[in-house]
Length: 610
Ligand SMILES: *[C@@H]1O[C@H](CO)[C@@H](O)[C@H](O)[C@H]1NC(C)=O
Ligand SMILES: *[C@@H]1O[C@H](CO)[C@@H](O)[C@H](O)[C@H]1NC(C)=O
Image (tube, protein in one colour):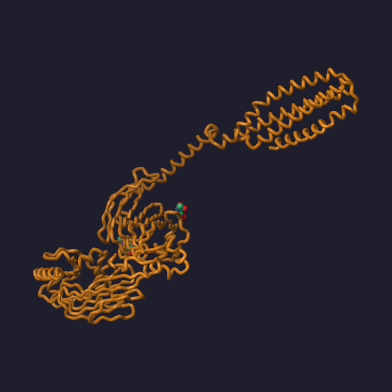
């Protein structure tokens, strides 16, 4: 009821602006494309001037709830028919606030290229692109369910003018249609629903329709996309795109079974999408794709002379409500995007995301210009919020100027070229290489200084310390071996004194030989003590220490056995016992001594080989 009253008010308002109300729409054909998540409505309008005065503008009206989702509106003159249509004449479209316009409606004025005189007609095409206007219903489904969507509109064209003839075609994806509103002249042809023709309808005629249908097309929405384009005058444009993507389709509830999904993905997860395809410019190189975990090598890349295609496959299938964040990066040849005009350089680059049929809620385009760029201006085909910042990277003195272009509700139709103009003196271009040359020179000097300072610097390095310690351990072990050898020499002297005894029978000489041997060994053991405790305290000696300790123990045993043997032999001589008796008494000791001596020699060899 409220809307009706609003419309009557508007009709009244239009009566006061005769140039608008003199128009009649002879024919309007509308085509609504619902084959992706983005709704595209193309209307071909044939308008005629029935008044006396020339008309220069056509008024388009939209309900405000549609305008909320209106991402793109475009009008062209439509000359010819079908494929021969020429899109040469883009018409300017501006939002207006007509006096008396009700708040539930929004108006746009299309300027005609030439005034339309009495009785003349003109045909134009209007493209309106909407985001988020297909509503999942039910809102929540399980993994195995298909996704159903609801679309609402009016079967009649919302027009401030009388409409003589009209029709509407709703194109659906080729799948199940749950239900659709049937009114007079409604037909279903395959996956197209046709409404009309309807004739001679007064201004603001309205007939609501609802279409409920299956669609498992990806509902990929980038809640935020940052595209960073960095220009290097040395031949490269580096593009890095940071995506934060969500599937805005029906949310899935219940458990997700990856096993079931992998076994039969089309049956067990029809509403999910597994991949996205990005159409990059031709000659893109060094392409990569990574997410929070790291580089993903399963992405695929195709290229020909017209484009480079990158297939992005998230690590898991994207069900409704699921999110993923990833980055893609690539380099482009500078000469394809940077040009010169009237003493200024300019970047000519495409806005929008290169990913097919993605909606971007908020897009930030960051153009990083070379350091020293000045007089920066932007030319864009649609309104964009503009701001500036500075990016500082290595080799920069004052930082690079960054132009930030921000736009919400971005659709593939926004993949249009914009330009960033700037001035730049070639001298500035030499700054970086000069800095590099000085930089290398500085590095060279530093290197020389470093080499000279090498010994003092590297002394503190852990590997150097370890090496030093090991050398110390080796020196100490050599001293230990040396002492053991000297002990063995003392043993030999003791043996020699026993042989002397058997020849001369002088017990006294033998006794004094033992005494001196005893004190020499004591001296040697005293010398050994600090060496052993050094080895025990050094971590570098840990692996060799047990062998050293074994060597010293065996040497001790050997020495004790020798002393016992020596004492026994001397005792026998003093008691004047015979040779055989002596043999018997020392026999057991002698065997032990031979074994021990062999063991000591083996241990010495082992340690020596380290
Ligand atoms: C990913 O690959 C790009 C290009 O090959 C490389 O520059 C980047 O360092 C890689 N990142 C990781 C985390 O491996
Ligand atoms: C920008 O590049 C496009 C595609 O190459 C081209 O059609 C357009 O004319 C260029 N714009 C300017 C201002 O050079």
